[in-house]
Image (cartoon, rainbow, N blue to C red; front, side, top):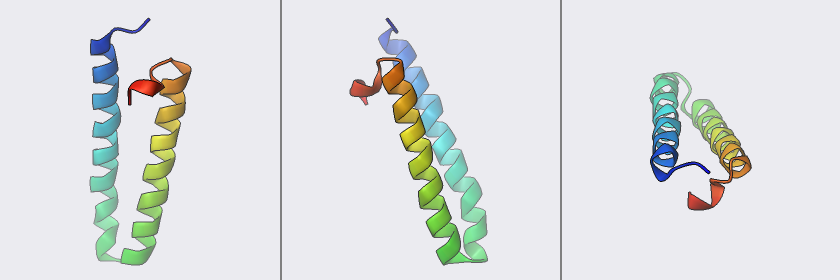
Length: 64
């Protein structure tokens, strides 16, 4: 069983990675806004889904 603190740290690093990805992809918004916006949403959704699956396998998915 994973402790509550470990769950919080996992969530922290997971969402911090999402924020860094968002900041990196915002660089492309200046060139082609529509394409980068679509790509941004698809990538973030796939990252979120992957994180949910991993947390669900670890038995921590319901706490999100």
